[in-house]
Amino acid sequence: MKVFIKAITYHLPENVLTNEKIAGEFPEWTVEKIDKKIGIKQRRVTSEGETASDLSVGAAEKLFAEHDIDRSIVDYLIFVTQSPDYHLPTTACIIQTRLDLPQRLTAIDVNLGCNGFVAGLSLAKAVIIAGQAKNVLLLTGETYSKYLHKRDKSNLTIFGDGAAATLVTTEGIAEVGEFVIGTDGTGADNLIVKTGCARHPLPANDLKFDDFGNPHSSDNLFMDGPAILNYSLESIPQIVEDVLVKNNVIMEEIDLHVYHQANIFLAELERRKLRIPQERYYCNIENVGNTVSSTIPIALRMALDDGTLHSGMKVLSVAQGLGYTWGGMVLYF
Image 1 (spheres, rainbow, N blue to C red):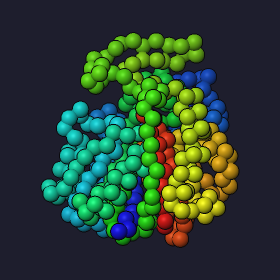
Image 2: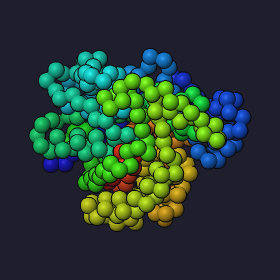
Image 3: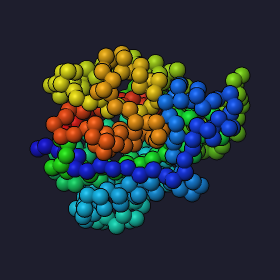
């Protein structure tokens, strides 16, 4: 049985955080410096009280309207997020009601970061092949802005909030190929929010600043940027090779590379290390930022809209993220 992406779209919050606004708060972090080092000019951030489920409901409603999809056909709902509305219940259950989806469906949350779309799509394909569902609605939604300390000038430049909606079924615009998925939990502490759940339920109130004025707190998102960078650059060649072998294709047959959109610095290092021609490496983070699990689906939709991606193309997508987790796949448009 073949499985396809039938339709894909995204939804972003209205609030825009520009480099000018960031530079106004941090004079040493100039607009030119952010543009050159990060490659992001602006990112969207949620307002107070606006959640990842709000963004994802918006993306789903847009998907149904744009593609004239009858929501009653959805029989499986996957919500990929690390920004749930509550510890419990499952946010996907709340989304089911808000979208007025059938009650006779499975609704699950998947707690994954940058690799969330790849892993979620692999799960969607698996449940269709297993006969558990025919039409899977895959939602990815993240609001990392809520985890960032207001003085964290580094991560404020990188992360944006956003959501994407993808309908996965047995016919559509892109056949879903084979996946390579992996996990190495030894890197978990390199991107983490330590407090707020069962291990450390109460705020630690341990905020301190390093010699460069960067905040470190167990109550906010911590990212060891150099460790993440080194991990990505060391692992990506093997991931790409494994995905190509799994799909029985060679690098020269890939028409477009749509990878997780972290920042322009990492993107360029990856592209050069893999010797990918610039015209075949799609990067769209300039106006949306790193939206974590939604970067790949947002990029796919933007590439379709601007004509970069079209029928007949083979697309290789790879993502590495916190956990550590990684995944890759080939899509046949």
